[in-house]
Length: 390
Image (cartoon, rainbow, N blue to C red):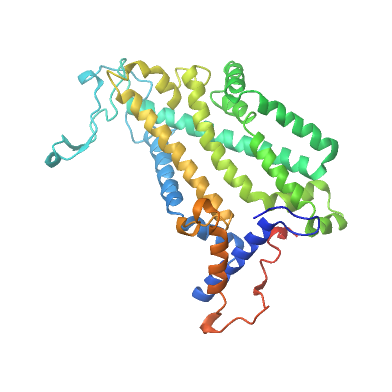
């Protein structure tokens, strides 16, 4: 279905989203006896996305494990070993963690003194991995925040003012895009290493090179929204451009911004890993997951656990954030549908089936009474879906 819109009418995408939100709310009103706001519908769809909910719980557990185990910023943790403390190597540094019961032929379930093993210098590898996880998560969150703020601001300003402002900002965006991301990040990361201040300068410079995709997406949304009646009404009432952008345009692009922010965090994890692996990211004596893989890649054949623990955590974090992003995308866009059986082949026929089924199910009001033909299912509450900023 085309998303093309004329100057005075909404896009087909906006019509579909409003229709699906309206009939979904009507079905819920019929079942529960109360009406749902747009925010409540979004939260409900996200909770119904099982992969996203499981990933969110798993990511929270990783956060809690990393920051509670060895502590952070002077706050002690429950693990009694420091990632920087050396000591004698016990049993060749073999991990003491065992999760296979004896009745299955394993060594029993136990945690042990060094669950992830030890490195050659005797450092506890569990503490090192937790420190690396802390640093990688902090970098990813800062990069996601910085890139989201810059991308949303650049895209909104370019889309609203258009003209020479749009031309200048988009050419600047193109200039960042044409330079290979890894090369640009490596150069800036190497420059930031001499600034001091730990990992924050590295995270900031990575955020300065990863905002371009969001800027283009927000610009496209704002170009469409600025022609709507609620924006014209705000301008007619004397609203300044800053207020129009912050209070009317950006809130209506929150779905695009939030979804892109989650994917930016996942991409930042992998980007930091690549830079640290190449020697342009986090530097010793500090640690990160990418740096651990780089330092112990030669031990893959003799002590593979030194490679697998940080590798599995990188994979787990990246997959969890991506699944959360998928759940947010489905929650903010009703056309996606959280159940694969409603999507049809590649999602092409799913939208029409969802609209038809929801429309048929919602024709009966509470108590089995039919809704009169031509009467809106829920008044005009979702009629101005894209103009909710008015």
